[in-house]
Length: 356
Ligand code: NAI
Ligand code: MG
Image (cartoon, rainbow, N blue to C red; front, side):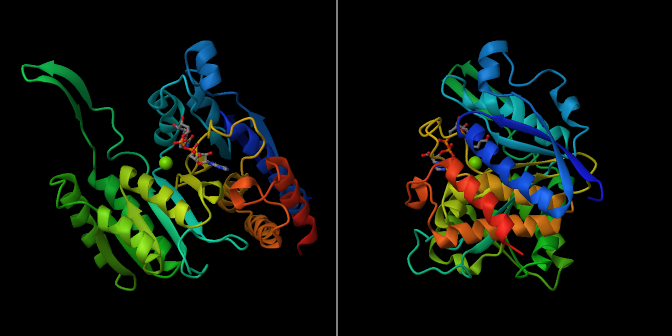
């Protein structure tokens, strides 16, 4: 032991969030022990269940309480009975914004032992990362509902700042330099005539500074089709808050499914804690049955270790996941098996001991 220690805030949340966070902590604690560092967990019960009890998803000083941590590990929030905009705006979005987690990073790849819903696609062809703008864009509170002379109507404004658009696009180009060197920007400047041409203009400006990176832009509808028909042409895909959200579920669906897709809400400057979670939600349809796939949450944990600077441990967790999936003996129902969430978590933790 050389005394490396990280304080982590754990927010299991609702539904399967609780089931998968337990398993991910099992794996991360094992990785920490094997790689000579310590993870100090503090658990918060912030959730829809708390909302039902107290009227708020988290305490008023919730964000302040989290600020001292090295990382935040979130399960998922959302449960029938509490409107989804309450759970999202009462917890997730305030944390993302207060901690300037303006990058939502969603890597997707086809893992061993799994097959894509797309026929005849190999792991090399399905390897991309969605860089989603995470702090502004379409997810805004500006607008309202009114009843006018012509009847009821709703207005919802988007906010795109030059600084906000530029930094996310720049992040995508920097990331592409460490990968296959291609960036595709999701746009819709034919239909959305103010914010999207603004986004495109900034994309072109930033791209000019990266002559070594191949850049292109694609309308979101065509890009969705392309992701299914020619996924091998995509490497880094950058999009606004809404477009990035939609594309990342699609990208997850064409690889191993939602049970396998991790994400990080990153504060690149490191002034505040970053937050790691699975792409999926609380899956009320399978909650409490012990059958949720914990892999997405475990891979989110590996992203957190990487962010904390524990790269060797992060690589070991990824390798353990791949080893267990390739062997195929322990698999949850979404992977075609009969194992439980705990069986798969335990098998991945055990595989860490076996890896070099
Ligand atoms: P969802 O991702 O929870 O579930 C969609 C489908 O995928 C369901 O059929 C579910 O059973 C399946 N699925 C998801 N994760 C799985 C896993 N690990 N293993 C096996 N199957 C899995 O999305 P849905 O149903 O749209 O939303 C449910 C709730 O979650 C809503 O309240 C929503 O607001 C919330 N949500 C929360 C998020 C977060 O906390 N970041 C993100 C997305 C949704
Ligand atoms: Mg989503």
